[in-house]
Image 1 (cartoon, one colour):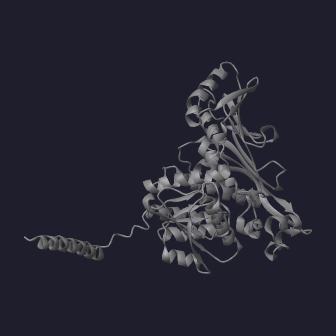
Image 2: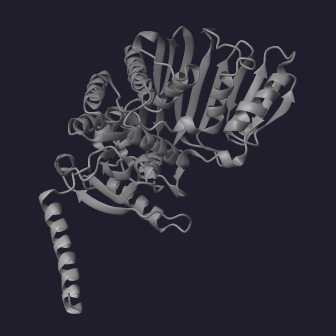
Length: 467
């Protein structure tokens, strides 16, 4: 074989090989794995982002999640605010994100998302009145759902939610709500210490005036998010759209009751007995409403809630119920604006046979959540607490110390590195959700406990409305 012939044969074989590969790829294209729930191929679609929580999910980039983000929404200031936040994250000096936004803005945003499906996960955070319908349509179309709380705000929505979970199970989809408060460090330690029987003992049954577990939170309409004043959409003040406070923020608190008091256990609706519930309004003047919405006047649809030229928003609520015989109390309060130097606050107590585990966030704590342990019998208790702090606590939060405040009372000092704040918790929850997608399943208690959680909030709303 001549040198020329050898070279010719070499390139002829190469040409045939490439041609064969091309033909094979044309005739047998790679399967479309766009909608398979694998973290090697996660593509996010944000639907109708009417709440700033939608943007907080994108404050961080995630491994194995495509950088292209598809946004389906109607035209208006809400989607523009969302896009502005994404742009700000992309252009910030420290740890900028790299989201590439594909906009699908228009009146048929839901229909277009369902037809096109460029992603396999729908993120939704906006009008609570529409959320469950979005969720139900998404799972019917085979799309995983990652939704801001609350998923539902009334008993009609609750019935749809149960149907959505049924369909999600059939189609092997992950439907999940964003429970950021599970990642707050003092709450996580409260849960951990409640499992140390030599420190906490057993959770008491509780009684009127002294429930076994209490979760209370105070929030504010005017606040700063990502360093800028938060402008809320005017519908946020319409309980027909946002829902009463008793079905909104309380979702987190009801979730924590189950998560802390009965970790890893399935809680059924039959385990719940509603005792009482009530609701009351926060009253806003027009100047206050203007400052937080940017509008010059109250919209016509809020006229039903205006009395003596002031807006009455039924955003406050309280519920008392029994969960497997343990008396729990959950309440939420909304004020207009926090005093200078303060923020949203949280109070919680778990009453055990050996100690109480208390979270406070007042002036004495510098308005930062702080965990206290209050012994009921000091004999030998300090040694038990030291052992827990050096053992289980140190494994979760290394460097945590205990400080004696008075006889029988200790403050648990968690290193600042673990106090990352509400906004950063969204990345933690999202990482958790991505693991569930990768495994194609949730822990066996998550779905029934979500169903029970929304049973509690909607039942409390019905009871409060009846009173």
